[in-house]
Length: 295
Image 1 (cartoon, rainbow, N blue to C red):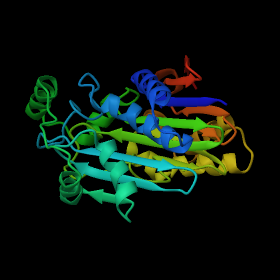
Image 2: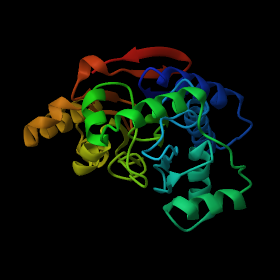
Image 3: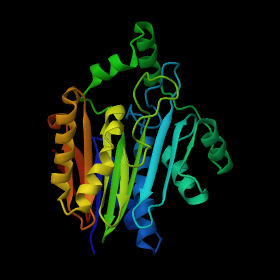
């Protein structure tokens, strides 16, 4: 019986390492529950790393100096899902999204409602700012750059979502978390917590998770397009490539931003695609063997 984990960007290695360790050490007997816990744990590990400036604790704040987190999780057996958006003062946000999936009839909670729910679930509020994120915000504030100018300046950098995929004998789980675009307008939400845009999982087809400039990924519903191609029998790699090619064809200016997707088909086949492939990397762990994949 085989198990595969995949995650986005350089910090994806930490995510898959932690996911594999959790998978091995979990006392849970149900493989589906073990896989969910492993994927969420891998995502949470990146959220708690202050050196990652685009996710969780230490993520770069919005225009008014507040860190707002978005996160989502979905499992492919029964299409259960949960998400949070614009969450302040709580980390890891992916754990709150998991509780939304498991404890409520809803798919998403946002802002104050999500924070109130987090407190009800026993999460403790804390500052998400670090000395480094405060320093960078002060530097930006003095320059007063607009969010779209920052987006152009940072195009291609690993500035966005940690996305994690898990596969075990046909069962799929996907999760993602981000602090979003640096210096964004308060309340801005990108693709990451949006099912079908930033992530999607269906055991009958496959799972995909995206990263990059959220507005463009959302506009093209990237994750669902990849999954539907895999449903038709297209390989995971070709599905990722075709969707990225369509994006570039339909809106050529997307070549100037980074939009990337990783996918695993229901049979364990995997793929990676990106608008700027030379600047993107994904990390995988198959039965304990770590390896890197570029588009």
